[in-house]
Length: 91
Length: 418
Image 1 (tube, each protein chain N blue to C red):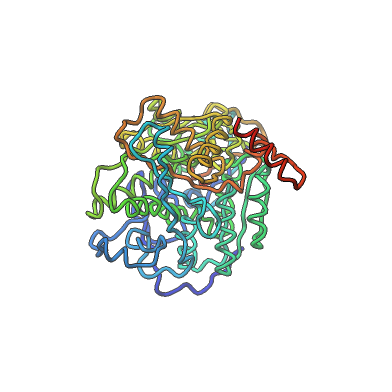
Image 2 (image 1 turned 90 degrees about the vertical axis):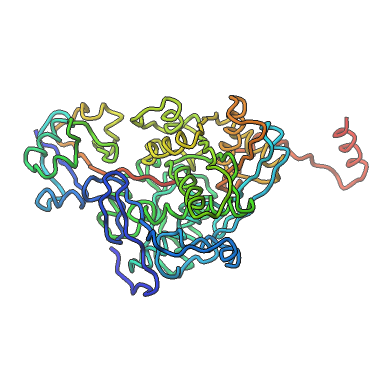
């Protein structure tokens, strides 16, 4: 099963310059673990030392905020797109 | 895609530092730390010469009179006449709140687009110019869209503006009229915001509240600076402000503290009180539970200008409020409409829904006993009621229609007096 992970430019540098990665996993946490194993430099940018998400980094699964779907426990399916966005806000 | 234009030589944005990990970044149109993805804030030269009260007072009445506390070296080149809005005393509101005095800081009449967002765009557009960007943009709930469109038009910059699909007509018209590229996005503001984060990353534009955010946010401090100066170089004891992304309350606290540190003002730091609509109150929840993790919500309120369910400055806003000794309150849509009417009837100021939230929250906080009889309170009114007339139109009395006869007027006067 294959899921696409889209990285912002600031993180793509740590993934050999790739903005889009094909990743594996049935939950968001699995996907993050897969990416972390393949790109160790990226690992500490996506999750803290305890394996928890940072408050400044938001994951979207098919355009929906993963925090509203269980966070790292959110399920992902074949063909899903995950977007990583540094948290920002305006008005 | 964007092209670069020759930047003004005299204006240089300040470097930025990560609020989370402290890493220093050279001046650039970036708002996210390369080390930890935390937010960046401009850093100031601690050795810079700051002006005296008299020197500030001798300058033109705009937000640039406080330029030593804004994130640039050199002279600004754009939007030189924004800021300088009235501070209006409202004694009948003071009586309602049971406090000594109340003032309304009235950015409903801000130049050029009738909201406090003119302040943050004034600083962001100067950063864009300094970086040589020819296109600016924003994700907006309306007021920011108006401010970006107006100031970009005047500066001769291109503007791409992204808004939720259901915004009020006045805010859509008040953006499109300036010739901006206006794009409606299906979904809530948080969807628009996420899209703009990707757009800023891919297109290289200056999205004012995304990759220019550090320079943008500092403009909010001028709201606090003006309050202090207009009160005669002293601070109020309490301030009530609306919260959307949560930035304003943090910048109010920062602004008051910077003026105190500079020896410009007397009085202790004001207690900061935050206001949200109960249909979108994630920061109020953070404050009241003193929680460490923000729980995003899907907004359900007519206060669209502050309907941000995923406020990235939420945790910082909570800290600013609690550290100041303040508190936060949420109010229903019916209460905010009543707040709009109360401000209009008691202070002669017509505000939009966010202002109604602020007034209604002040009443709720007073009812909770959060104010004392000797408090001096400033209500931060950030937007104009003419932009959200639908919110109140249906609850106002219908004007009687009469023939042009004095007898009919007499009958109305008699009915009004009875």
